Amino acid sequence: MRCSLALLASTAAWQLPRRRVPVLGRPALYKSTHPALSTQPSWLVPAKPARAAPLRAVSIDEEQQTMARVAPLLGFLGLWYAFNAAFNVQNKVILNKFPYPWAASWFQLASGILFFVPAWLTKLRSPPNVDTKLILRFLPIAALHCGGHGLQVSSMGAGSVFFTHVIKATEPVVGMLVLLAFTGKIAPWWVNACLAPIVGGVVYAGIKPGTAFGMGDLLGYASVAALASTVAFSIAKLLAKSLMTKETKKKHNLTPANNYAVLTVCSTLVLLLPSALGEGPAALAAIKAMPNPAAFMRQLVGCGFLYYGYNEMGFRVLDLLSPVSAAVANSLKRVAVLLAAVIFLGEKVSSRKIIGSSVAMAGVLLYSLAKTKAAKLPPKPVKIVVDAEEPGTWQP
Image 1 (tube, rainbow, N blue to C red):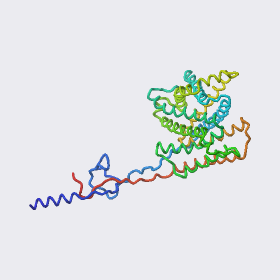
Image 2 (cartoon, rainbow, N blue to C red; image 1 turned 45 degrees about the horizontal axis):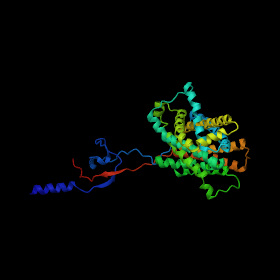
Image 3 (cartoon, helix red, strand yellow; image 1 turned 90 degrees about the vertical axis):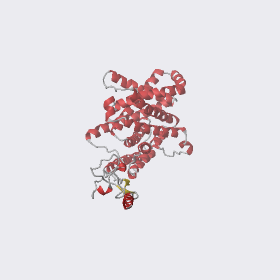
Image 4 (tube, rainbow, N blue to C red; image 1 turned 90 degrees about the horizontal axis):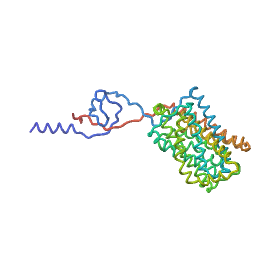
């Protein structure tokens, strides 16, 4: 009887209630696969437990600013801006006499094939190693890319060039929201606040004095298409950036130039059927009715070369920057478009353009400085809490 009572008392002493206590470290004696499944007795925890490695609450891409990296980046940015400005001017000239934006978009995409395929065949460029798995990874990016391009061109055809670029100036903000939605990463608020002068400066420089936009303009096809194009391009760039890993580059020889070349082939194939069904017969009839169809086709192909050139430079920039930083550079690119309109389309230089451009460039500088500072901030430690047992409750 006494033995039974002693056994019951001993059992009751070993089964005390459980509670949650913070665990920061664990001695090397017990090597459990998961802290919550550990059978370690709490009375073996050392007096000064080892601290776990701190976790980052916010992740920001750290970009090393070295001369070997900055010099080509500046060159690619200059070519990107130059090709894009020339493309926008030529594209608007074409749309004024050829009101078929989706057919024009397909011709512009297909024209790029005439540029890089001969370079591959003559060994001026090393071709990529393409397989079925890689093509399947490119198809959703291609759908977004050709859709974004078609919407962008049709927006310019439905409205003015400056109105389309005013809407598309919101790309840094859209890119930030897309990055947050797909990856859960976001920079501190004071870094994202630097996007405001960039967007505001481009919008101020682009809007002509006395121009009024009503709700009908903001909800019209031109603005909706421009915004949809911005969202499509932002998602496509994020997905394309995921292919720019060292392993993928080495396995498939997927340099930035080859990356966009493969994307161009896939985008051309994806857009072929929709553009042919939507505008194909009418577009061909309009070309045949022109006084000099051959000259117009040369102009269309030349515009396609400009489009391919500025996008290849854009992919080279994307390879060196994060998606949000590339969106900031893309927003500043619209200042170059406004300058090209002044030079080639005869628009006057106004104080509005000068002030807006200056504010946008100052915003880019502030964003770069803020992002560099945020990257140097110490990570915030995260306290991990797991279930542990009261002293005396561990049972072998």
